[in-house]
Image (cartoon, rainbow, N blue to C red; front, side):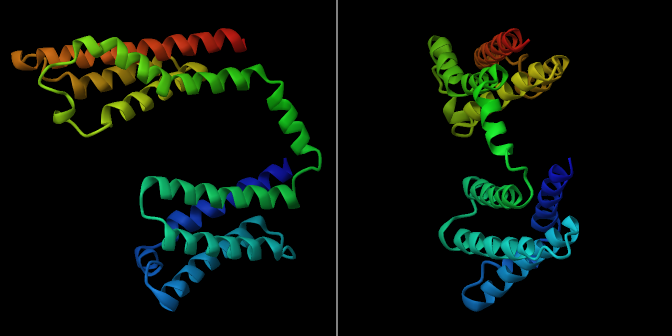
Length: 241
């Protein structure tokens, strides 16, 4: 438990330094050219190192702040120079920092046999594999199936022109992931709240005659999406219990 506590403290220090202590002036300064931008990046990396050092409380363990400072500086320089400010770049940046933290903890504090035990546990866990398959199925495979199912009812005036490109696809991904998570965690009543919330936003124009076809089309897609996610979720529950 003590080893796990150190990992949680390292992760907490990252969240504090990267989101609560990265002020606007610091964030803007990091994107400046030359030594000026490098100085701001070094300050930000130093804040990360100080937070990790203080929270872990291993006063003789200088390798932690040193490793955090060095790797964070390298990752941030790479991000600023080669990547944009897109969502993908943000996720890659965060995953890189978290991977460093987990790797550092693994080398310094994790029990020696934890790696083999963890890999062996996953390899022989029907719960893990069933859950993984479920989350994969509610993404693109379900999206393709729903698209084929409702293709014959697509309004002739074109839904794509009336909304943001690919927004419907991502709404479907998110809602099915949420539904599957609710079912697996035993909070199936939350599915009703999700359907009600979506209904308020998507079906408010039902009383307009010109919108009935579009409303029915969206409703058909929503019910198909919810049905698939529910069936997959219940199947996983049967497998893991």
